Each structure stands twice: as structure tokens, then as C-alpha cells.
Length: 64
Image 1 (tube, rainbow, N blue to C red):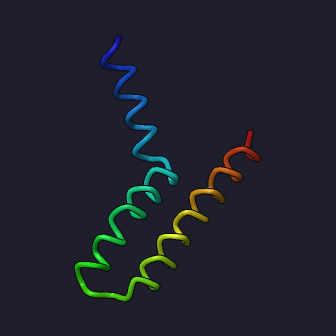
Image 2 (cartoon, helix red, strand yellow):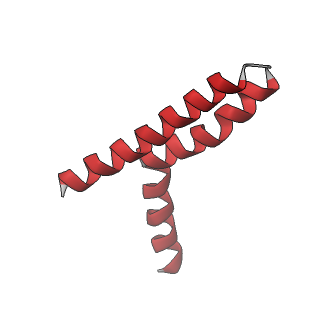
């Protein structure tokens, strides 16, 4: 039973748009600094992902 619950919960987390946006928001600035993009560009992209996460949260709330 415990394995089933864990499998269902992890499945929901990995299918969540907010989770995907959060992982992308963490990885993207790292890649940008690795490829020598400007810090301003990395900051703008990171802030865009934060807005996407916030927007998805509002959309999820309005669904219920």
C-alpha cells in the first residue's frame, strides 16, 4: 500500500507543470552561466519561470 501511494504521489508531482517549471528554473540559469550569457539575461529568464509557476498556481486554484 505504501509503495502504491508513493508511486501515485510521485507520478502526480512529475506530471505537474509547476514542478517542470521549477526544475527548468533551477537548471536554466546554471546553463546560461556555463555558456557565458549575460547575468541580466539569466535573471530575466529566471524571473519569467517564477511568473510561470505563479500563474500555473493561480490557474490550478481557479480549476477547483
